[in-house]
Amino acid sequence: MMNSFFNNKVVAITGGSDGIGKALIDALIPLGAKIATCGRNQDKLYNLQVQYSGHLLHTLVADVSNYNDCNNFIQSTINTFGGIDILINNAGVSMRSLVQDADVQVLRQVMDINFFGTVYCTKLALPSIMERKGIIVGLSSIAGYRGLPGRSAYSASKFAVNGWLEALRTELLHTGVHVMWVAPGFTSSNIRNAALNNKGESQGESPMDEAGMMSAETCATNIIQAIAKKKRTLVLTSNGKQTVFLNRFFPALTDKLVRNFFFKKGKLVR
Image 1: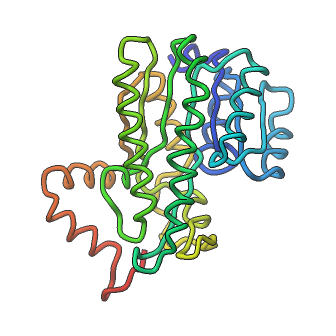
Image 2: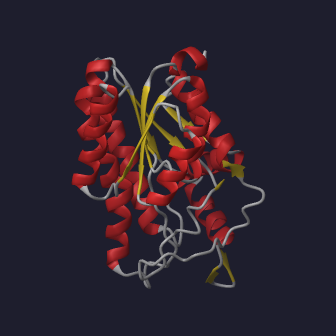
């Protein structure tokens, strides 16, 4: 089913030079998709072009927190391929700091990338997607269902993405456009290494044990299958599903469990 579904589809993916975004490209190109992606690192995008030389791949250096950059990416994709069938809002940044220690600019920076980046690209691509009765995908997180300590700005941005896409989904219910969001659990990628500290600088290393996490490749495969089936939402990993379930039905207990997971002796350790 996936082969025929994605063949000749134009798929625009933000943040495609690393992690889940790169894994999505690696999986979609063999399925015959025409890929457009953007990222902030020109060298990584160049390497992507070299890797897929001869394939239908369009890349552009862009920061999704900047509206003009988003406009350039979306319009150049439409100019290159004639339109957009599927938009995957993947670009994002995490953070790690207690609220009392974090500069308020960290919250703004995370919201600008994770939430407004999704808003900008979706809004700009919407006319083309509506014309083609396409699909809009938001890469959310378990943190979009359950606020995580030390990740307050990240949680806020993902809650905002979920709510905004749900409102959009309802508005577009009878247009033929499908809107969905995906909540990966802890996935092995560079997002924690690039997470912002209390001053808005990259922390440079992950406080988590990455070895036992779902790989970006497995995550991408699950996302692609969910898109082909036009699922409403997708929550990944057993721990992620358990967290969402417990928080819905046993919120007070979940407060304690989450606190115990992230803190040791009163100190944030994850």
